Amino acid sequence: MPRGVLKALVALAVVVAPSLVVLPAHPSVVAVDDAVIRAVTWNMCGWKIQDACRYPSIAAKAAETKKVMDLRDANVVLLQEACQAHVAELARLLGPEWTLHATPYMRWVDDSTSRPIWCGDDHPGSAAAEAYGSVNVVVGIKEAGIPASAKTVEYLPGFLGAGRWRHPLLCVTSVSVAVRACTTHMTWPKEWNSTDSQYEEQNIRRAQAARIVEVLGQDPLAVIGGDFNAGPPDGPVHPLPELAVMYASFRECDQAVYGDQRAGRATNGGYRLDYIFGKGTWTSCHVEPKPYRDDPNGRRYMSDHQAVAGELVRAPE
Picture 1 (cartoon, rainbow, N blue to C red):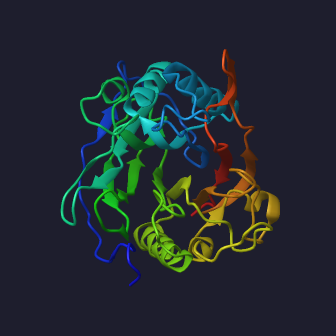
Picture 2 (cartoon, one colour):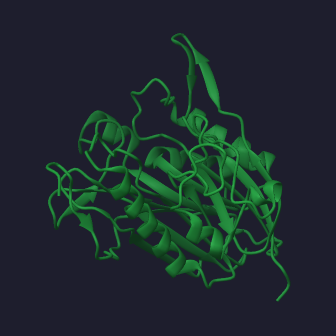
């Protein structure tokens, strides 16, 4: 193995990490059409708040998320790189019909111990960490005050070694919407200036995709969205093979546009990285405009990712 290349973690660690559940303050019961899932996924890029492309306002990011959710009449939201402060503000904006479940990304301290990653400078106890909290993946469901029947958390296969990230797979089963909604964030290329080869990275993402299918592939209620950090197998720009197993088990949102072709529109700098997969028929799929705010320092994007929103209709059983 070349010097500096970290070992791949082969064994799956199904670890319940610290998690945040933002519960509705005043539950109420309303009718929900459980045959139609209207899902939004977005990598908020919230954790590295000092970067110019990551707008630091907690209120603005939460408001942008709600704006897309309202536009698409969402009943499921799937977020990545969301700080606890973003989750809390979004819960306040959404009100009592929604429940948000959050689970942190983890960082290896050594080969056997990991800890949550903190927004900002990733120093527990710092001003940024205190203001923003940990960085999380989030599943939100318009549950109308009916509690979720099950929540599971595990960490996908990944590279092992001090400083490396652990990527959570968070799933929440809702009885009110009749969905098993999941989100994750796969390993990205050259994660933190590593010396991993493209071959090693692709193998890790293949293992991550295979694990997702192993967990969810036979569940007719499963919907999973997130930042998969790989192009679609038939995409026009930089096609990659890692997600072929996902397309074999699910339909992807942009197949509403491309039919059976495993392709998709760009969501990050000309590349397709963000997806929503499910079982049924996608009747619509939208790649939202890249959101920004103007401030005294000029135009600043709130994320380097665009949100994806789709409507999934399940076939009658």
